[in-house]
Amino acid sequence: MSLQNLNVIDFKHGFENEEGAVIIDVRTPAELSEGQIDGHIMINVADPSFPAKIAGLDRTIPYYVYCRSGGRSGQVCNYMASLGFEKVNNLVGGIIAWNSVM
Image 1 (cartoon, rainbow, N blue to C red):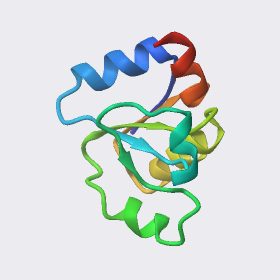
Image 2 (image 1 turned 30 degrees about the horizontal axis):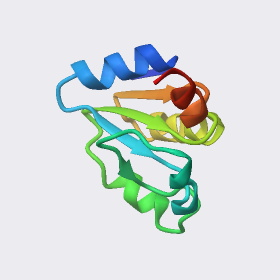
Image 3 (image 1 turned 90 degrees about the vertical axis):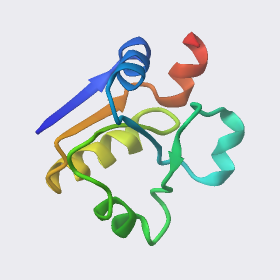
């Protein structure tokens, strides 16, 4: 199992270069107006179906998870690691950091 907290550059490099990598946005739909990373899938952490949606994902592929500032996505990464996901990556600073660099 691998859980990493990555800065914007390493996060982008990772999902662009790892085969099968999936980007997960765990924010609420209302937060999408703050920006988003192209190619993401939305799994709202506040949605009651969140645990089931995460549990249904393939645990063998790499995931790149982000939220607004990195807090919720960090919690989600820890949760995913506890479920046995092999590689999860948290975007430190979230979309706020992403928008300031990209």
